[in-house]
Image (cartoon, rainbow, N blue to C red; front, side):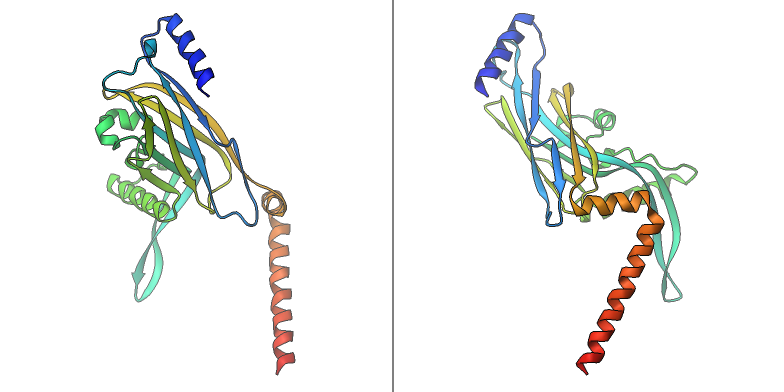
Length: 252
């Protein structure tokens, strides 16, 4: 990797650019989910090339975000009514990421101000969940907090304030864990170069997480032929129940 970086630095110096250059990459562009899938780790790494090839006294910081795919969500809130748990209120989010993870070389609130963090959606509290509208602001905030808390407990939303390691002010790397229940689809890996509270550069890479083999066949069948899929699931359940009852009677 050092030779390509040297060539990039030389070309960068010839252009006379005044801002650092971000050169990111990821360890895998595609993650396959099989029946034995228990999770995976993605390595987001790269280099920061400074003008003239000199690292300043206060080098830039790095934040990386992995998110996707966007989906519509209907959340319901349960309360105990007359001793029975019932759905009392609900709230619709038009678009929310199925997975969101952010890692940074320092706590985000020390890198950027609230406005910049909101613009770039840096941090769980700055996710733009696109509520359906019509609800009171306090209700929207309550359901947003509930969604973030639920997905954080499912390891689908996470934040690592010191999850990016920078070596000699130039090379950086971050590891992001993907849980087994991660939704399939296209993900975006975003790398932000931050200095003096400003985002100097942004680079993106796409990652595809998809099912393969028999799991892919089942997933496609459920989407393309939902009635047949449901009928097959009920039929299999009935057959398994009848077979279990037969074995139970035979053992008596």
